[in-house]
Amino acid sequence: MTEQQNQQQQRYEDEIDLKELFIALWKGKWIIIAVTFVFAVGSVMYAINQPNIYRSEALLAPVEDSGGMNIPGQLGGLAALAGVNLGGSGGGKVALALEVLKSREFLGRFIEKYDLKAPIMAAENWNRGNNTLVFDGEVYNPETNEWVREAPAGRQKEPSLIEVYEELSKLLSVSQDTQTGMVKISIEHYSPYLAKNWVELLVNEINEEMRNREMTEASNSIQYLESQLSATNLAEAQSMLFSLIEEQTKTLMLANVRPEYILRTLDPAIVPELKAKPSRAFICILGIMLGGMLSCLYVLIRYFQKKD
Image (cartoon, rainbow, N blue to C red; front, side, top):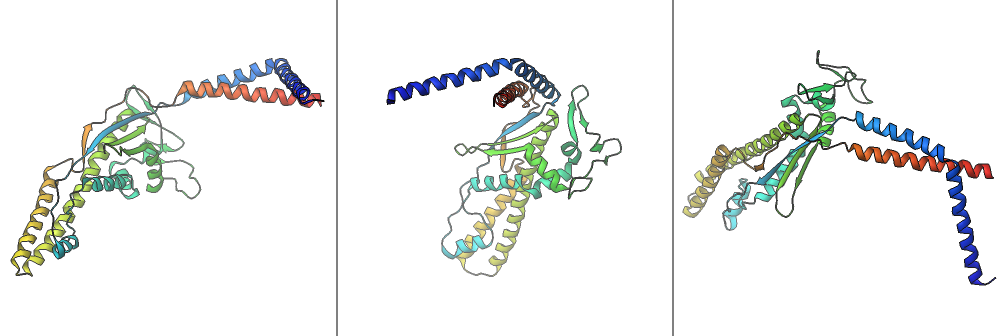
């Protein structure tokens, strides 16, 4: 048999296989229709019962510092030892602030300060009519403020800060544009009002956190520099130490008068009107496709088993 005849024979066999597959699917068309219909109804019911989740976000800009001082030689080392920031680099401070914002220690204090355990761990929906959260009765009793859930392995009935932090980390998104330096902070939650409120609180808290750190560092630096000033008689050294103290005093002044110390709000968080998810249309389409594929596979397997 020539090569051309082999190719023709192969095409003929392929055509037979495709025809046979079509026949098998046609014979099982009612099974395919029924299973696909069941999956379609199931996916619609599932999609309808999914609660809306809203996303609120704020756009922030790094607050730029003025240029730092150029201090030569040993005095530069002294300044570094005192904890004086001479570079005036706002980018490093912003990167630090964003890491602090996502840290377990910071978010843990945030959760405790605003009593967020129940809204994070027990909420299952939001009542638009009276703007209240709907809590899962099998997890938390809002009337008695009692946790009634069946504790997961290794956990307690009342969620620990670590457990709540893990859940809050899933709701929180923090990103920075590498080109513009703009920062976005967003929260997803059942309640659009809580999402907006938490974003605002997080922005305020991280600015307050970084301001307090800078004030503590500046105060310690001034104390150290003043001790060095009293220990030296060199006029040049005294002049430079006075300049360093002046810089740290300026830092204290800015920390006291600038509420948005590290991140300035360009576009504040708002109460979202439209849900961010779920995509109910996508869930329905996925359910129909899954039902169609599984039913076709079942029909084909059943057909060839009978054939054998």
